[in-house]
Amino acid sequence: MPTTPTRDSSFAEALAGKQVAVVGLQRSGLALARELARRGAVVVGTDEKSCAELPAAVDEFARLGATVHCGEDAYQGLCECDLIVVSPGVPIDKPALAEARRQQIPVLGEVEFASRLTPNEIVAVTGTKGKTTTVSLLGAMLSAAGIANRVCGNIGQPLVGEVAAAAPAEVLVVEVSSFQLESTALFRPRHAAILNVASDHQDRHASFEEYVGAKLKLLHNQTAEDRCYLSCDYPELRQAGEGAVAPVTWLSVGRPLDAGAWVSSADELCCQLPQWEGVLCRTEDLKLLGRHNAGNALFAAAVAFAHGASVDQVRSVLTSFAGVLHRLERVADVDGVTFWNDTMATTPFAAKAALEAMRGPTVIIVGGRAKTDDFAPLIDALSRLAKATVCLGESGPALAALARSAGVPRVEQASSLSAAVGAAFAAASAGDNVLLSPACASFDMFRDYADRGEQFRQCVAALRGN
Image 1 (cartoon, rainbow, N blue to C red):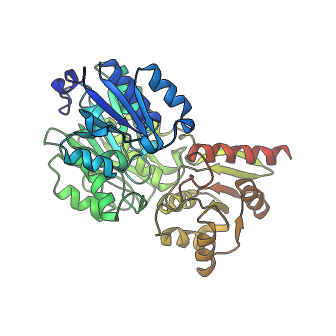
Image 2 (cartoon, rainbow, N blue to C red; image 1 turned 60 degrees about the vertical axis):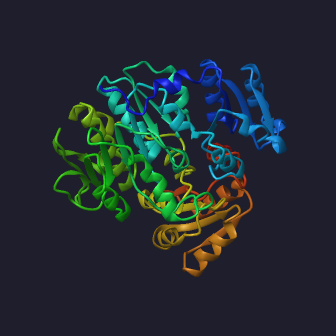
Image 3 (cartoon, rainbow, N blue to C red; image 1 turned 90 degrees about the vertical axis):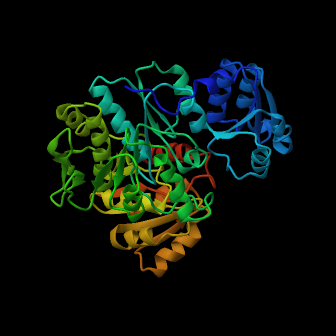
């Protein structure tokens, strides 16, 4: 396997003795600090939160011998550093970072920084929805084929931490978000997949075009030696593919293709690939629900085939993979009602796909901190498919008003997740589903999406106890 072209040995060697600021002290920031300290850099940690809000992180930075600036003093001395590395949660247009760039201090994101350190092959997957499922499927397929790999990135394990631990032959399968991609410059994955694009992160990106532009940076440094995988179901990705330097493998969940992989009108997963041609399986053979997950499965299969996996190895994973935590996860049955945790659905696009994937009447719980003002696709799905809708959180009143004005049947509001689960259960009958698929971020009421999912699980357990 050729060396990852992003790697820069002189960059890695030059870190020793350099003063490097890590902006953002949580999971990615901690991984960055550990790697920098291991390479002999003088680490300065900064975060706009107070030290009292980040006790574990502050203690870890201190253990590494790093200086920490928090709260109002977060950016103190930033422009005295030789390099600044930014965690994904920190917007790159912060005035302090803009000033550093003006003074010609390099400002890198965590993915960009990590990719310059590793000789390992990188496979990168992005998209508005389905990234976590796709990288998890791909990791399982590569493992089935005997190909050592590490699934990391936005899925929860920072790339920089896996770079330090990986053996040279391991493939790094990296989930990357728009936040991580916007700060890339030289990042060049050998295999790059963009699953889909829909409105998201309007709280971070100035426009949909800017958001899509961040996603497309995944392809910018690829050459004819690399390969990209794109859905032809989105005009933005069709246009990107026309200008791509790397050879394109096209995929679709809505149309047959002359070459590539697609979900047929007969609900078959079809491949017309250089490595293999035929029908992998039917959508009903997948443990994953929904046509969108069939598309995710095809992306993973196409990349796995390109790495030498056999059809039997790919098919075995497709028909046994049960999904990932917090993504259309079956939680429990209570009096014949099935509860599903889809807390990772933080966009209307994702919640719509989840609702469309349900088999049988469904009561859905939506709401939280909105990341976009375009709820039209979700409202349409609620009108067609929801038995009842329970609205929650900051966006709850607005979503309830939109749903009622669109004629969505039985719309309720709840003041807490526990109340929402109770209302949804009351609206359901035996044989129905209750689906938590919020279409919004969690930060209005919860620590993060996982906290929301765990609290949902606890609420369902309380119902069972009653």
